[in-house]
Length: 232
Image 1: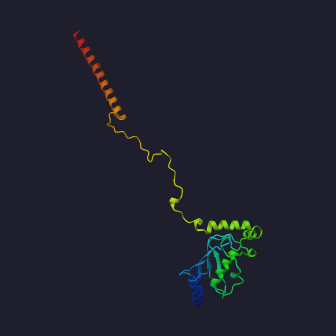
Image 2: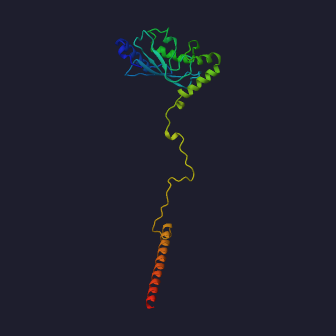
Image 3: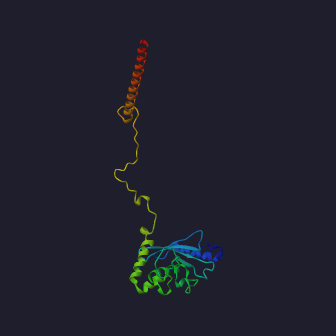
């Protein structure tokens, strides 16, 4: 969303800066303020889920966006943390009277934050943006509470909020027993006399020697035969 710093009059910016600074120094109970030095018209906050509600134990991030007509027009509020609540739409938009027809310029940002926190304690199903949550709140509170609690545990609690895990925390590849780290091929030195290659070399040499002896005997017999014929 684009910044409205350039669209607001200087005196309004000064008032906003003063109020945001006061909120950061002394925030309402259970609420933290994260002012931005770059864009004072977008205020990020976090709200602790109130005890006794399905949101207890959760931390819900939220932002208020001040438009170019602020404070004549109320800011817009959005939950950044996913929540199952009748007055919070699927995109995080917040429906509360103080951000609509009940808005007055003199109410200020502190009043808005306190009202939104109260909304977590007392939802208003009559102006529901999440119709399913509104219906369950009226017809089956146990189911509403269960659904709201489940989303709180999944999205608003640090241990299960989807924070990146250490790579060593995840499942590691299994190593099967007896599986070699590296498959080594046969590597037998050629010069080993009692090795496979050495035995082959010895056998081959013996065969060549026998063949040479047989040829020499044949040649000798032929020569002797020729000499005998000449004598006749």
